[in-house]
Length: 113
Length: 115
Image (cartoon, rainbow over all chains, first blue to last red; front, side, top):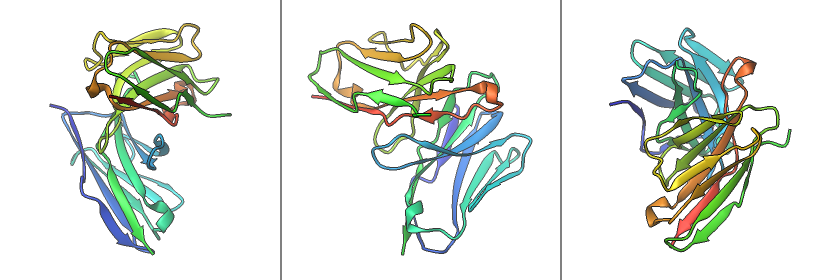
């Protein structure tokens, strides 16, 4: 069956360190993969998209990698800040051009000052 | 650009009642999506529209659920004969694939509690 798996345990790190979140998928061949941030009681907010033919994407302190052989994406936040504390969701898009996203369960990041 | 809006933000209802939620997408976006999210889980796809046409429905969407987008602008999601298992956050998102990606912009959600 198709699965998107993210670390279900919360990630606790110290301010200034790099946070690394993992997204693994099985039985998919996604055309692209997206990362979203979600704060409690709010809708997800888009952060980054990476396509199947891209290895790495950066935006300010954020970096995403996409390894289609390992079927894995890594999401990095460098120089983390307490304001980065949130749940981060990984989502894959199909190649069928429907735009439908399949989400992982999310990983909660807590950055301590 | 006022973003995606949803109404109401919260809804408490008794089991067996019907509820209707509204979503207003970003005005130039032709795709509109409905998702459902329960605590500790990621959003789960329910259905999507391209303009006014409903192009895909999840198998999770029982016959008690119906969605419309009559003029290709706002959309409504109705749940008939609500059950306690329907309690969740209902999220709406919109996108414009003509921009070259299908980045989805989410609304704040409607939290449904069925007593």
